[in-house]
Length: 524
Ligand code: SAM
Ligand code: SF4
Image 1 (tube, rainbow, N blue to C red):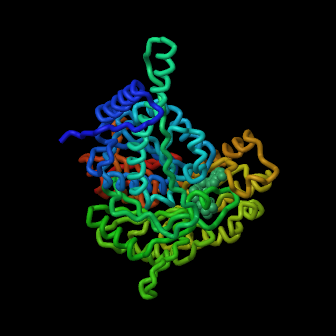
Image 2: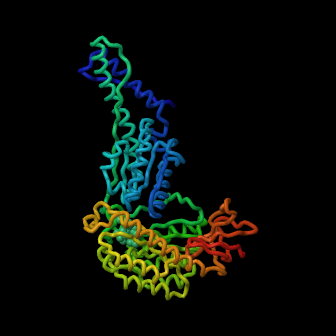
Image 3: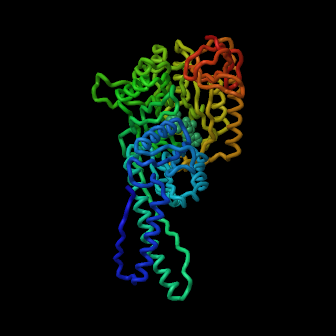
């Protein structure tokens, strides 16, 4: 059945002619709203509303987006590939460095004009939490601002957004009618021809900015995983470490862990669905504290890791990121004991200088970090080690920087993610003096990357001749090679007579190496 409406105007100030004019305008706006705005904008739970979501930043954001997509689909939305096709345009944002933050404002500016078509815009994630309602000032076409600590409230916010949008359209229509009526009256009284109308925009503002109040994790059974073989499971959210340069404790709320039972239930469910690789996620995955009240079932991080590795059907388990302060020997013991746990630890050091580590409030010194490295190197298995490094932290001297370079040599990392220090809002290091000029940060970044590249050449060469198991990730048409990933988390491109299946496991003999990848031939 079509939708109908009846309009009654009670307005003592309007003359009959203006009541009629106002009615005409309201009726026109309501009719055009009902005819022109797709069903998707109506507040019906079962309608085919569309959304577009772009994700910026880390794996946590990628996985949050999978959960947000699942939630939206469950709420009756359909995901589309382009901004043009969508009724609701969402950006899941990152604010870890200034550059990442600016990207989202560029996107919002690029598509601002689409608001005139009735599209709604939402900013999710770290920039949303960090900037809060200031986003509405900078980008007035945004209607929804929601930090990750509020995602569990998304369904109710979506309903608010839909209702506010419809109410807003009607309110704007009424307002427009009033303005139009007064304008008509003035124009008629002046003896002018009457044409045109004034645009009235109605601003809708919905916020979810729970900050550090919540103890709850964003758990949903509707995760829309993008890869059918490999999937993420968040085990801990937020951060309580407060490193002096980092926005995460302000943008992702306080540290809170899921129960080991719920993590294991998700792992079993994924195994039943055919997933063979699981990656446990958290800002500091190894700071995990099982909130289970039953002491008999309570698990440490290493125990949880081992238990996930023992779920039938799971062939590989990875975990990221580990904080060096909370990295215990039991994690290495678990890797040694459970074959499905991958031969890889990502252990961000940030700097090789104890003086800088202290200023960064990292809660460990170089010696303690090297002790963790010694545990990993003493494992029965060959475990690859990767890290994050920040160059140009305020006050980092040439001597400090030299210590970072010497740490690279001492550890022999398999890969390093290097970043120029980026001053961030709210963080203690923002007010530190001795800022390093950007050109100097860029120079140090180049030096670290060049040195690490040389080290990796040696590091990767040692695999030549080895038979390594890979998970097949895809086929590169251009190079005529299959793409695989080793347990060490290295890319191994290989040739094969008969093509293996994507998602399957294969053994590949390594024949050559590059600084960032290996090359080989399928064995079986
Ligand atoms: N929790 C992890 C840890 O403590 O090692 C790191 C998570 S953080 C999201 C990822 C990386 O971003 C950090 O390891 C650090 O190298 C980098 N990072 C964080 N804040 C930064 C800043 N203000 N400037 C440059 N890099 C930064
Ligand atoms: Fe940021 Fe430090 Fe927390 Fe890592 S531990 S997320 S670097 S505050």
